[in-house]
Amino acid sequence: MKTTNLRHLLQAIQDEMEALQLWEVEPPSAEALASDQPFCIDTLEFTQWLQWVFIPKIESLLDRNAALPKSSDIHVLAEEYFKSMMVDSTQLLVLIKKVDQLIIQ
Picture (spheres, rainbow, N blue to C red):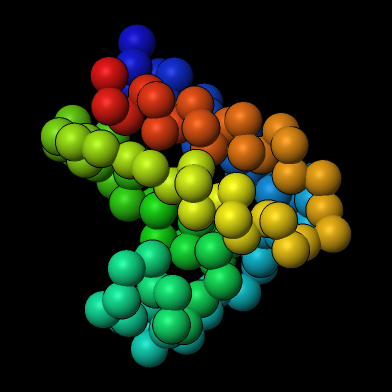
């Protein structure tokens, strides 16, 4: 049940990012994705990290029935990131918060 709910939430995040025109077609460079900084903060925007790093990582863990992270607190980062953006991120933030909550259950 948790796996199914998490998959639905990840898809809902993608759908919402597409609706907000935040979902990218072209991936960042391999160098940008290889950053050793948390959240690739030095090479990616938060939305890029969410799309190209976080979602694929969680999906991979689910596919392999591997353990999920013990915690997730990306909602705080998302809130800060979207403060300066001219986009209605309300629904996206709700979805991200639900992912955080589901991961720690």
